[in-house]
Structure formats: C-alpha cells, structure tokens
Image 1 (cartoon, rainbow, N blue to C red):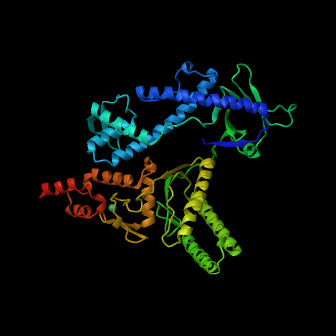
Image 2: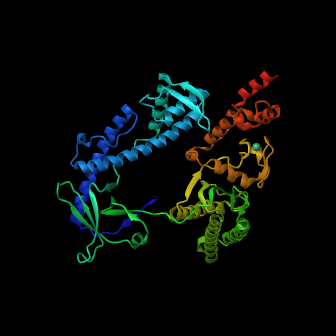
Image 3: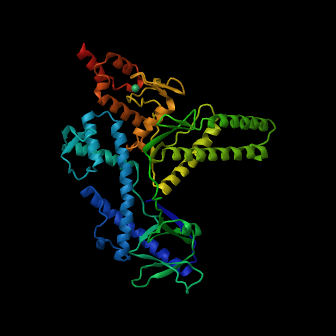
Length: 489
Ligand SMILES: [Zn+2]
C-alpha cells in the first residue's frame, strides 16, 4: 500500500523548538557514529545490520532513540549500496572482460557477496529455472569484484548524515488526537521523548484538512526537520486500494507514440488527432513569436501569446487524462508498463517538444499514480532506449529495422508491424528487468548479448550472419560469428 507524507502546521513555542533542535543535533551526530560502525560491519560481513547492539554507540540519546536512528541510517545506506550495484553492472557490461568472468562478477554483485566471499559457484539458469552453466568462483574473482565496487564508492561519496531529518517511530513519538473537552485550538498533540529521561514534550499541531479527508490509516510515524528558524512536522498515511476493482487484463504496455499519443501492445492506437492538433497550435505560436520578434516585443509581454500557451497546456492535460481514462476503462489491467520519458516528435518545434517532455510527462505520471493509488494497479516505468529499433518478434536490434516513422520491418525475421505498436510490445517485455537506470549504450550491449546468446537466431543461417555483419551495432561482437562461418564452410 502506498504511503503518503503530509506537512502539518503547528504552534510549537520557541522553548520547545530549541529543545527539538538540540535533539536533532544529537540525532545527526549519533547517525554519523552509527554509520561509521555500520560500514565497519559491512566491510567485514558484507551487509549492514539494523539490529546491531546500539549500546556500544556513544550518544546522549536514549537506547530507543538510538535504535530508531539506526533503522533510518541502515535504510539510507542500503539505498546507497543498491545504486552502486547498478553502477557495477554498467562497468562490467562496458568492459572487455570475457563472458564467463562477466557472468561471475555479476553473480557476486547480485548477491552482494563482494566482501564475504560466501558464494562458491555462479549458476546460470534458463527461464524455467533449469541450470545451464556452473562456474566456480575463485579468490581472484572476488578481488576483482571488490576493486570494481570500491571504484564506484570512490566516484560517489558515502551518504552524509549532517542534514538528515528525524524519521521517528512509536519508540520515541506518539500522536494523540485532542480530547473533545480539552484544548480547543489544536487537533493533534505529538508526544516526543527528549534527551532527558521521563521528560517528554507535547507539540501542538493543527489539522490538515486534505490529510483528514484522505481515506486511509494514519501511521504512528512522524518526520521532524529543521526549516530555517522553525521546524517542520510531517505525518503519514497509508492509502488503501479500491477493494472492488477486479482486473480484466493482466498487463498492458503503452508506448508514447509518434503518430498517435499512445500505442498499446494489443495493436490499438489512441489519440490519433493529438499531434495533428499540436502541430496546428505549434504553427500558430511559432508564427506569432516570429511576428512579435520583428516588432521587438518579448513573447511574455504578449497577451495573445500567453493565452495561446495556456490553452495549449490545457489541451495537453485534458487529452492525456481523457485518453488514459479510456484506455483504463477498456482494458482494466492489473499492471501498466510505460517507458520513462521519451516524449518527442520530430515534426514539432524544440519548444513544444520540451513542453511535452516536461509538462506532458508530468501529467501522465500523475494520472498513472492516481490509478495506482485508487485501484492498486502496478505501474512500471522502463528504460526507453532502443525500444523502437528492437524487433518485438525475434529481438534483433538494428537501426535499419525502422523503415519509416510508422513502419517497422525486421531485417532478420521479416516481421512487419506498426512501429509504435512494436515499441509498446518491447516495453512490455522489459517490465520485469531492472534496466531503468542504465545508460543507452549499456542497454544496447545487453540487447546484443541476449540476442547472440540464443544461437538459434543465426548460427546455421548464412544470410542472417550477413545481416549481422553489416550492422554497426554488432562491431566487436563479430568474432564469434566469423569463426562459426569458417567452421561451417
Ligand atoms: Zn525480427
């Protein structure tokens, strides 16, 4: 269930603010000490320990506070490590190491065993879980893995705890609703433990009507942060799903198309008038701009220009919402897979393309977020790199596959399909992978490797080998192919 954060206004007096600032100062100092200890554990054991005995950490904070702090520190450290895991994958994919070593290194990375050397074998399994390959992991593999992960550490500083907020759970904080007869003014009292044992302070907090109205379960969890001279109080709510929603389709994938606004993997196109209309608007605005420029008037000074821009935004927003609602109604999916930011159309001005990729994408994300919260639909964003050049039928990647903006024709298997529909299908198959953060070239290498590792695509077909050998993406991957050709002849 999604958790949402809501800022709350308060009326905490200066004396209490000073007490809170003292706690925050000590909290940050303690976090730094805990992090130091946690890194020590990490380099020895290979992972952090959120239940490490906090007694050994020197601090003015109570044991309960220290434990709360430790949870927060470990979660920050874990997210740092998972980012470095991604960096590791990129380095390995873009290296000249041989395939077996790459596979071993990626296995060490995936299981986070850089430092503990627990794993003795790297096992490659196929989709059904059947073991295909087994390679022994040796000392020098671990040594290399550590060298790589340490390199990523060097490029990205360890998290600092100098400015963190306090994320406090019920060990040290309690939210109390005002009693009917008492304290008319305030709606909430936050009972907060302080540095002095047995001397909590009570913080008066106003209600936030948006928060009150939002359906869901309030969590006994408060975030407190410094904000200039004041402090900021944040409450949390767990938003429930609409329980009577029954999906009709399992998963749909959507491509943000070039000819129509959205292409769905089923082959249907939606919002066919969208770009026509935008092009029309775009021309009027660009003409007006040129005209204004001739007269030496800045566009922002023109009422007509501003009005046109407002209308354009309104149109984009309404169309996106209308069409996404329609798609949702037709398919009623359990999951929607969509590419992350790839909103551009060669026929529109750079200005409008910018507006689309910022404003348009924001509207799409908002709408999908709403589906997620209301109906519990899973929304997955995937890396858009090369989705328009890969064949959704045989997975062959080639720039020449895209005949025109509308037509896709695979040079390898000959599949002919609407180009946007082809992209949407590729987006769908990418949904389960974790490629989101990777650079374009890394994605390309992964696609090529995946294609070549399935030898049935080309091994016994000389025409297929010719096609690959003339594809510049495959430069550097030619050697095994050439050997195969010689062996055959
Ligand atoms: Zn194909």
